[in-house]
Amino acid sequence: MIQQVQNPILEIHDLTVSYDQSPVLWNIDLSLPEGKLVGILGPNGAGKSTLIKAIMGLVDPSGGYVRIFDKELDLVRNRISYVPQRESVDWNFPASVLDVVQMGTYGRLGLFKRPGKKEKQLALDCLEKVGMTAFAKRQISELSGGQQQRVFIARALAQESDLYLMDEPFAGVDMATETAIFQLLQEMTQEGKTILVVHHDIHSAMKYFEWIIMLNLHLVASGPKSEVVNEELLRKTYGGKLNLLTKVSDLIRQQEFNPLKN
Amino acid sequence: MMSFDQNAFLIIFTASLIAISCGLLGVFMMLRKMSMTGDAISHAVLPGIVIGFFISGSQRGVEVIVGAGLLGIIATMVIDFLRKKAKVQLDASIGITFTLLFAIGIILINLLAYKVDLDQECVLYGEIAYLPIDLWITKAGFSMGPRITWLALLNLLLVITFILLLFKELKLTSFDEGFGLVMGIPAGGINLALMSMVSYTTVSSFEAVGAILVVALLVVPPATAFLWTKNIKSLIQLTVLIGIGISIIGYYMAFWLDSSIAGMIVSVAGLVFLVSAVFNSKKYKFKSGTRLEPEALSS
Image 1 (tube, chains in turn green, cyan):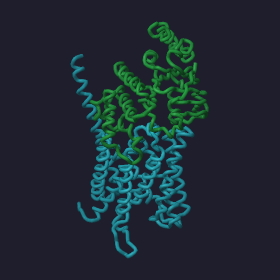
Image 2 (tube, helix red, strand yellow):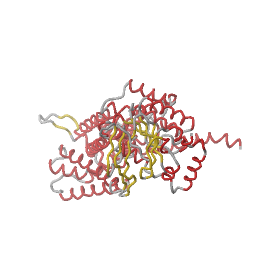
Image 3 (tube, helix red, strand yellow):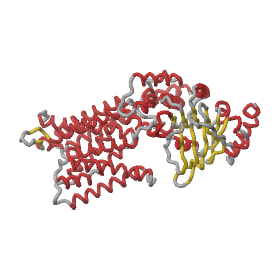
Image 4 (tube, chains in turn green, cyan):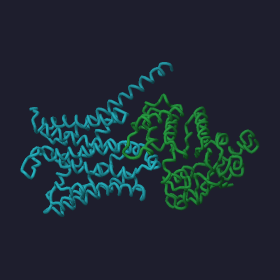
């Protein structure tokens, strides 16, 4: 079930990505509408992170293309925000929380220019949105995993973009924070921003996302939650992973988690 | 017999300039986990120096600096190619690249021995003690003072300008290269610019302290400072202070023991690092010791 849309904000056409000759993404073809909270689901090694990296040009596709806001990537870089996986950097780096959040403003500042008062205020506002104001002066090496994740989200907010790509932003974040951040993301989509989130927890995915992409090397589904979440497609996505498969079936059997019966 | 005369001042001043230039660049090399790439560059520039020397016929030509700079960039790109495209481990690609280029340099020195007044010892160890007699004489015959001091001063000014201009970009790409790339910051170009500065600093300093000791000045002061602080501005300040401190102490230790100044400066740096490392590990143990105590009592 792959639903294409008119005037897509993000269009991926026939995208294939391979590492060392072995393809990790096959012929991905999808388009996304504006102002939606989009979840990317799939088992480990399904190519979720690779898809996000290919959208941003961090990995070179061996075929196909990506268009964002109906333009080439390089023309719209300052309208895209990125939250990488927390493990992708060394948190021993000598920087304060405020320093890292201000990095989100560097793209707009351009080469050679230093961040000033305006950038600092913006960074403080973004920290407030993720509930980290009290930690602004703290060195990043002294943060817990969940706090690090919130700093990365604040940094992406400081980019003030229209399209947000988040790679597992909720890994290691507690339930209360996860709920608060999901609410923040929902408010942002109401302002017309589009947010793509790689997510692992099927339970909360059903609760918050409006549009769901299911991935397992191939694109299994892309469409509004109510139309694509069903047992057949979930099986297709997670199939073969027995443990996970029973969990998924359990979830579907439990009425309250089944969006089809609501 | 301690003394502080003009020569002592010139040597300490020049050594400090070199130590600061190396330390400033070294901070970013360390944060990028590329300290050993600095090592590789300092050796890989040798063929560039020899070829530049051969073309210009003098150790002082611009060709020498250009040749070294080019070789530094080539070394960086070869290391990058081996690691990313040929999937060789980083440490192995560094080891292969710089030993190969250094060996080519040695062969070139031997082949051109009659035309090039350059020997491995000078390149490897340098001799800062000769600095006061190697003067920069203008065409009018006016002496401007030691040539190497001027080179070191120019080098430091360029390094400071480079870091002031690109501080934000260097910080960002050292912390999170992917994020910088997504924002359209030319991370590859900034990396190459940093490597060129390291190459230029190496070649500008090798006459005074030699290629091996340049590596120590690139690596040790930043690593020592990082044991004491987790703030990037104080990290840079402390690196500069350590650079000056080891130059002063190293000079007088060498004077006292009648030994190599550059060798002594690096030995002092190593000692300061060891003391810092031991002190910081003790501090950590002490902290965790006091934290464990109440638990031990309650059980």
